[in-house]
Length: 50
Image (tube, rainbow, N blue to C red; front, side, top):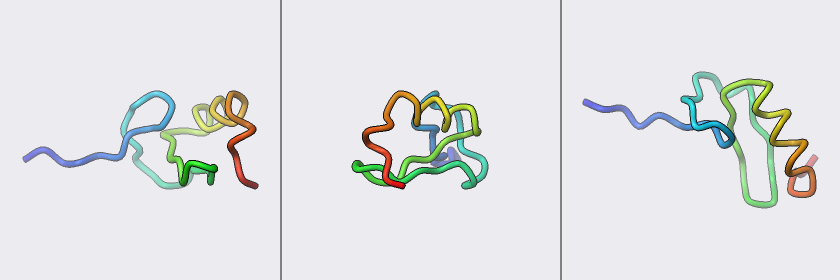
């Protein structure tokens, strides 16, 4: 049976832990690692809600 895994917003890899996330104007975004989260914030800073 195939499990429905949550995919990283940036690279598409499986999100194993929920530690890397950010609220945006489009909703909650989840990431597989701190690197993907950082790159997303750099590229989409205008969408991030702090």
